[in-house]
Length: 40
Image (cartoon, rainbow, N blue to C red; front, side, top):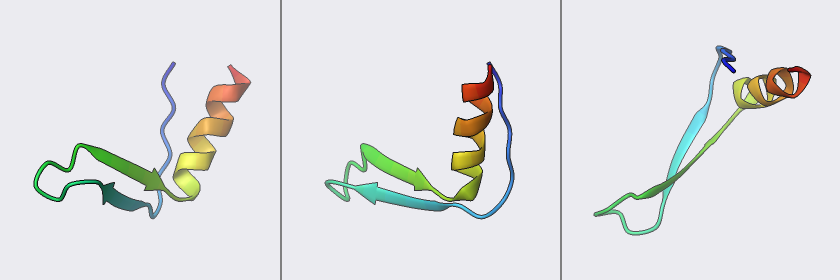
């Protein structure tokens, strides 16, 4: 599967700032891609 969307997103790292091993990406493009993947 491949889904592409464009727009503004927010990138947030969580956890130890030295390692930054976990992150969260949020925004409307993320929901658009999740919706499109659900159609497949």
